[in-house]
Image (cartoon, rainbow, N blue to C red; front, side, top):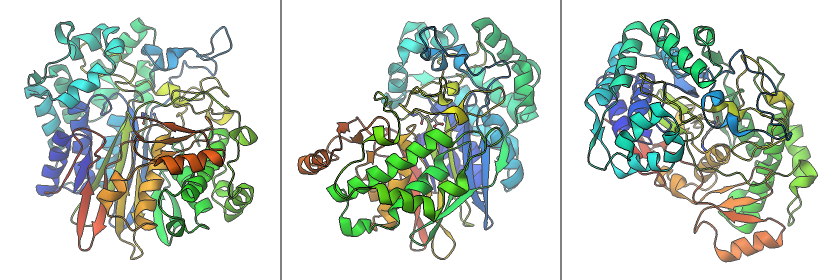
Length: 531
Ligand code: DON
């Protein structure tokens, strides 16, 4: 079973499984296909994280972007003491891409080797070369950010040919990207990180005023990390450790809530949303203040994951009153953006599983395309505390541990997650797109199954809420909160805010002897399918 945000990419993964590949092979092929058919978030110019369960062992792979060596702590500090927008848009927002190195590393260590590396890239090359039919979903990804894409000649030429949005029903081709993928297929990551392709990227960077150099590219490494493992309701949860905040922040929320009987409180009752919001608020306050790249700062994971921490938080939660964020952490202005990023869940017939989330950060990342290479670059630098203490694109107010330093990886919310059943076998494969809402969505999908006994499609479909400490708001989806529930929450002191939708999170779960896949109904084109 393969679940992704784009049907054509799901088909690629499904075919790899059908031809004998394992879950890792399928995830790798799917990721390259997403770079072609879902280029708003699928990428070779970005980064991500992968959590895998293969032959009974757990793995966590970090292919997050790094800050270029010429970057400095205050590079985005404007004359007014505030952050400039250079971290969100254009050449200066780009971190050193990690995806190609990561996918190769995953395949080398965990791939079945029943298929070659080149064979895993072949479907993506074909899709880029021969093209695919533009549908409304694809066109909309461009329409949403066409102002930004227009500003960059490389992106405009690729995504707005002749100055217009590609028309629905026409064929979209990207021969330049096909050539890049062919080089990666024949030479492996060195074809991307060294030689003519890397030099071309570095030259375009220099021309555009960006910081990524050929040396930065040559020096990039994906890193195996120790998976972050915790328990919830007797299940083992395998999450991503820093530089993703996903595993530990989900664990903090889960540990605080472990003492509550959520089922007895009732799904989306005021009392249940209240304790969820209060647990989320405290977990995000700790996340934002203390976490960063573990190769640069010490992350207090043991403390934050301890029973003592959860107990101390619970003591401060009032039964019928919200704790104002100002008591925990400085408030910020609301900063909620749509779910860009893309998550892939895969399971194979041998019981292996992959949860992989990859991103360019914003839709179409930095909006800049290296002329002749056919792909956009990320704007991941904005995930740093670009000016510690001020909010980023997602309204997160992060602190010194996540300040910029050369070679450092920016803290992420991406939360690829695998849940094991009480029998020790894979039970759920989860993950999401949506910045800070990723963490709370992954927790809710897990809780929907483990606390409320929902099927996987129901767990994905169920309305979501979100709290991230600052801004001091409980976010909810349209029709997601009945008026009386909303009024009850407001009466407890929770300000509420409706947003278009919270996160995109296709999922896979075990159902009896087989697998149940759930596409994300909030995202056009999402598809879960097995061979
Ligand atoms: O790594 C992160 O946390 C972000 N760059 C993820 C970005 C994302 O999900 C975009 N969606 N809003």
